[in-house]
Image 1 (tube, helix red, strand yellow):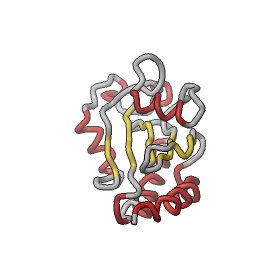
Image 2 (tube, one colour):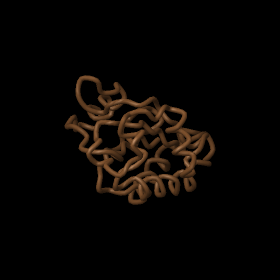
Image 3 (cartoon, helix red, strand yellow):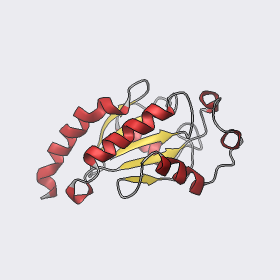
Image 4 (cartoon, one colour):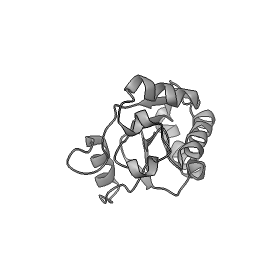
Amino acid sequence: MLVVNVSPSDLAAEVNYREMRQLADAFGSLPGGLFRLLLLPCEQFQGAQRFAPMRWRKKQMDEAQLLAHAAQRGLLPPSTRMLARGDVNGPAAQALFTFLKVSVGDSSDIGGNFCKFLVAKDGRVFGRYCPPLRPALLQPAITKLLQEEAPAAQ
């Protein structure tokens, strides 16, 4: 599973959405659901969203609109799931992101949108990959993790 904090629009959005879709296309149809994208819309990095639609900057885009936004970019179930909007840093951080940061041994704040965590089916955090690392560059790490999990899935 690849867990990513996302934004509908910032300077890196289009390339990240396109490359996440390529990963979903490449790995999302594997038997047993071995690869999934889990997206968390995050509003903590508003400065990077200066080109975002005004409704997003005012935090008025609801979850249905966020899901539609991802779907327009080809990120569709069953390979993609969208979490409720939330924070990734600080006291209001989603418990999932606190767990991911601690589990990988790097509890420092996430510095922006599109920070990615690769997670095994058993919940083991395989790695933390923050921008500017693009999703396409994770293909070797995903392949390695899926090869490790393949015998366990049979």
